[in-house]
Image 1 (tube, helix red, strand yellow):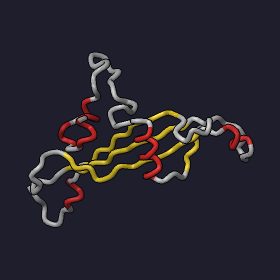
Image 2: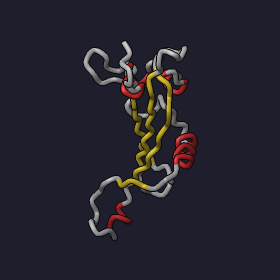
Image 3: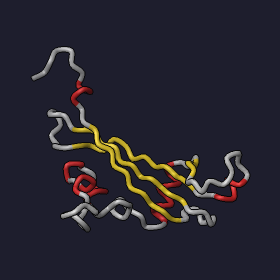
Image 4: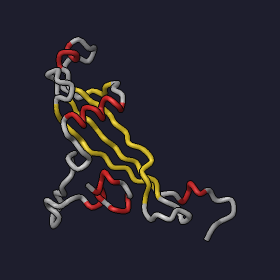
Length: 134
């Protein structure tokens, strides 16, 4: 049933999944965490394809640089701090280290009865995304 004046956005579903990658991607002696997030929106009935469509990939870089923290106001906290790194650079680091969506963490379930299996939601064919089906 369609209600007059109702927004299509109100009936749109969204999904977002993230994978983590830990390595010294910059080769500077400081460990990095990269976050690769995929954001999907549900297809409407007019779309011939069931499920979801990828609307964007997002990339975030965190670094644990204890030397730099030593000169900060907060001092050495040991935290991984967000860095201003562009998406193309992060994608390049992932490619250089042969990291794919499948190789990120988490990838295998740790739930009872599903231990060691792919996490179904993160590898769902209804996401219509070649990255998740590899």
